[in-house]
Length: 426
Image 1 (spheres, helix red, strand yellow):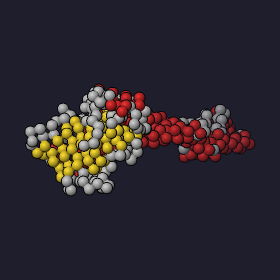
Image 2 (cartoon, one colour):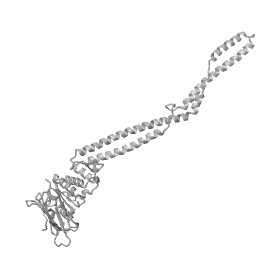
Image 3 (cartoon, one colour):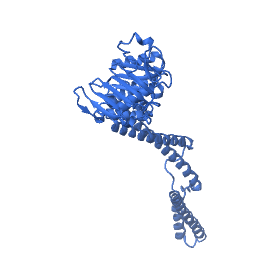
Image 4 (cartoon, helix red, strand yellow):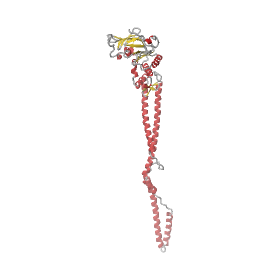
């Protein structure tokens, strides 16, 4: 059962002369009044009484008063808290008269509840950190966030390289009708040498033919002297003629041209190979990009599942990119009432035993927003004590010149559930 404030009585604290109040057990109790009348001093006194010396004002005694400050708060668990005397000595007693101290109060009073603006004024990342801490998933979510950021940066780099590779490949020239692999000059020279060798053999045979032709001439002139020699020469000539008659020399012109153009040819071949490699590289990086995208989605799903299964203080709360979100919106995009609801829910989760919060300066809210916030507090069984520069119907009590005064508009509603208050000095 969370602890709430039943009543409070303050004297000579900051701007307070004498104030007593019985706040509504559930819902919103608004302390109204004009500026510099002592409204905020009431909240400061509550914080000091329950939170200890770290909340003690630098000048706690009311200016002009010769009487030391006196603070008394009665809680609904039967504990009575008093601070009084020159040293503002603390006295904590329960319903049986058993005494306690600040340590007992700290066990059920949440520090943020005494200073809710401290939480509200935190950065969105600090709020998220507080939320993750109380639901016990901060370390795991931090690891997932770190992994997601790492994968995202890696994917960005991979995507940039893939785009560069694709652009580079598209800008490279493509040559048709060229070999797939670079041509070797030595191979072309070897082929040329083979042709020259065959042509040399052809030339040898031609020379042989010419030789025998000359021999034939000699034989003819000496026919009469050596018919046998003539016949032999004729026979040799016929045989040689048969060997030489179908010979055709091969041209080396194409090879000579290829040799002279080999560098230009290989340049084109290498350009085609480079473009092909660039296209393969680009596709490889695209595949890596897709894979990293899938990993990022897996991490994001893990984060969603982690928060979905967590014991969140309020439906609609989440953390994305290290920032607190409510119903998908960042802190500065949600209404003032929603901010109060979120802050109050998280503070309550920090210490479920603390059933109240203190709120200062609610004049920026219209009455409809105040009503909505008050209804939510009642539904949640929470107590909020707030100040507002106003003397309207929404105020449960009016502070004037440091004193709690009758609010004529609220006088008839003194005993209603949502506006229970006790006015007057004591």
